[in-house]
Image (cartoon, rainbow over all chains, first blue to last red):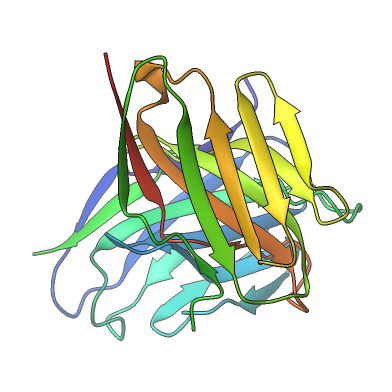
Length: 115
Length: 114
């Protein structure tokens, strides 16, 4: 089945540690996104990529890094510079090419907690 | 600056009745609006959308209304079912943002009681 796979489902980070969240899609979508969800807040965009080898900062990129070496993969690294990393992280993808190809397809998320 | 706001954190409705979820926006450049539904520990799934050139879009039990002059949209679910219990996010596209970059509201938790 086509879809987006995020792993792991739960992740714990120690102080000063970098951790990487995986996101893989087999939908052949060009665009991929990382969102963060905190209780009582909407989904906030961290980074997005519209094409391989290119990505842009979203609204809350500080303390995060990404890469887009393959169309199928868009891993997110939460660095030690991110002082409040505890949140639910969602990866999404969408096709591009038409103005209303805005319907995002989401993965099932990764809950990151700080030890 | 929250450009898309869902001012009701939660809504409780009896099964079979109508659920009305509201969303307000401030950016008049937004030209496409979407509703997503999210169950706990899962990613959101697309529910219904509406273009700014329309004022209503219907899909089965779900209808979205758009009032551009008031910068307000609402999602109506009729009749509500217990399986509709979830968090509902409204989202907007456009407003000079980059392609495909949606702006989300805070979400409303809908509980439908049997």
